[in-house]
Image (cartoon, rainbow, N blue to C red; front, side, top):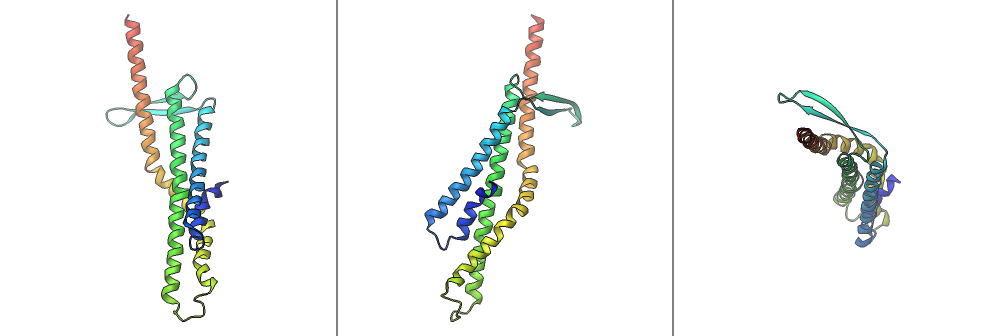
Length: 194
């Protein structure tokens, strides 16, 4: 199923042979796959019965004072909603990067570079020119790269997201949950004083 996200790479590889509308249709298929996977991950996060979400409360000096486990169940809608949003967003960003945009760009550049090299280094009067194989070589180069892309790109995309979007989203979730806890404490203190 993952390779459905790579249909746009086929479109990029065959761009010289197919209409632009078909290339755009391959992008639509790959994007639909990416969004479908994101919705699926979000739905699974929404329907899972209970899963802890751990947050930390840093002190003023930056050390960790308290580790709080917030259960993700029907009684804690905010934590659950944040978890669903995080899973959906993370999957959408990852799929759009790893399955749609970066691989398509790489295939496009491989095909372009191969075509440029052939036109530059194969003599204009060569028997290779004008034959279908000459036009097919850049496409074959693009197709040859497709099976390598998941193995090469997935760890890079994971590393990039581990250092950018994932910590950012976790920080946002923690801040929101800490604010909620403070509000709940304030409400319970006010309730006890009355």
